[in-house]
Image 1: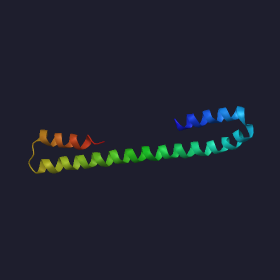
Image 2: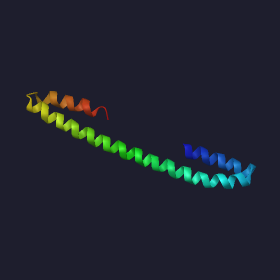
Image 3: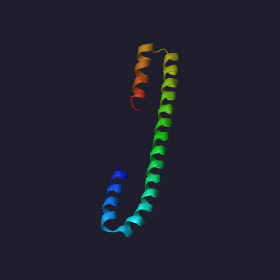
Image 4: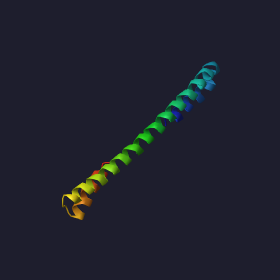
Length: 85
């Protein structure tokens, strides 16, 4: 969405002020690269968190089963942990 708005601003600048357009066009490329990089980092972080939460849920499941909880209760606890993802 930010990229689209920036592109629209540049399109308008192209008609109004060609010199400013050329300067801003260069900056837009850098901005788009930074936004894309941030998006990749955020997606990687989210995937890592999902993996950690899943691992933790499985560990909790094993622990509560060892403690004597029935399978249904253990599955419910796991589902609640995974529900935060």
